Length: 252
Image 1 (tube, one colour):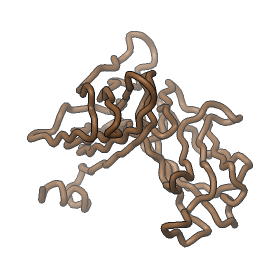
Image 2: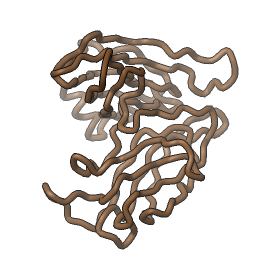
Image 3: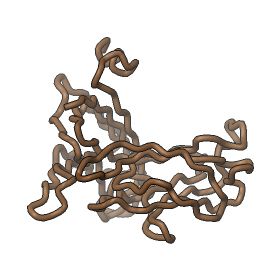
Image 4: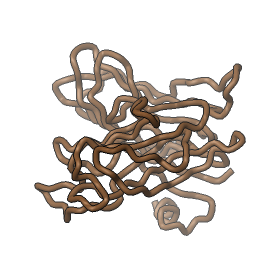
């Protein structure tokens, strides 16, 4: 534990800790455990934009004044992490300056409200999508309380990094059961056949309540660029589900 604390503090060169969490309202169709129900995996960089459905999420408004988007950009087959902070403009779409091939997380960066238990840091649903009102990539809803951050239960490992799974937790509505799949898409920068496969790493059947895995030795390695994360499904109806997982990221 002392070692991982020192990594988290930035005292171990070439190593870092990634903590991810996601949630979804699962249905009878298997889907990524992400708030928007999708995790886009194009084979080339895509121009993106974001928008709110509330005019108060603007640069001088009472809601979100700016957002921070973190993802990967593909340059010549090398996938590097990029973080961009951009001012909001209410219900008018704002272009994301750098096109991305993956989005791993995004959040409210600044707000016009000093948030508390009754007033959140954004006023409406924030949506990140393909430029030109295209496909949704991620969303941050205002209900049941403005979360201020995306809930994406998938992570994409950059080039030059290897990830090791330290722990994972799954939480399911206690009145329902869900089947949970932890997967990897290897060699994600191979964009012509034969592709790197998408493979199951672990599967939990009939999860109700919660499930925790803490390994004695880290699981895998997952060599970047690759995608790792969770999908889920229920036999009938719908079911709220959330996941958390922690990775040790090491330079190759």
